Amino acid sequence: GAGVSQSPSNKVTEKGKDVELRCDPISGHTALYWYRQSLGQGLEFLIYFQGNSAPDKSGLPSDRFSAERTGGSVSTLTIQRTQQEDSAVYLCASSLYGGQFSSPLHFGNGTRLTVT
Amino acid sequence: DQQVKQNSPSLSVQEGRISILNCDYTNSMFDYFLWYKKYPAEGPTFLISISSIKDKNEDGRFTVFLNKSAKHLSLHIVPSQPGDSAVYFCAASAGRDMRFGAGTRLTVKP
Image (tube, rainbow over all chains, first blue to last red; front, top):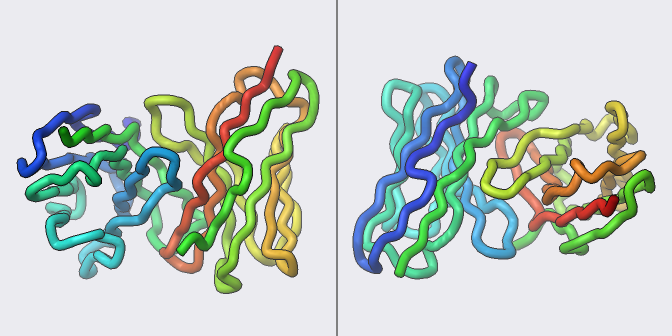
């Protein structure tokens, strides 16, 4: 079976533009996470989806960031009015059972976002 | 607020020797700990984990040790191989809250 798929793999955008990042989780995985990794930093939690429950948005850095997960599968992360500090690798992960880390996260290859 | 810290950004080891990667955490609520390995241009991949009820978990060349009183865990790789060269992330979780360290870049020299 396919792993977690993210697109695009690279995105260069001008400051002030909106971008949309896509994540296809592993089929059957109920939990989906977005993280980002800025240069020299660890993985920063952004948002978590679990089944039909309300998402945990506690990691989103500002109201310019939003995410949705349609039909319990594909997720999109949208960044409005991008700023240079948004430049990072955005990683999506899914797991079979969210909240139980005997079920580890499976990561996609990430989207490298560069805001010029 | 870095709840998980990897204080060594890099480590270089000779092939065949032991690699020891260290990780410290501050939140005593963490009850599950994991190590992930990351190659360039790829997402992190799960390597090994340990729950807080154990102090050691071994899987082939990889062993993770947990010292709860010191809030410290380590990953031992024996013997190290050039293919182990990657960035290693330590992670700790309490329920669905998972925090990652900044990573340690391991280089294994032939």
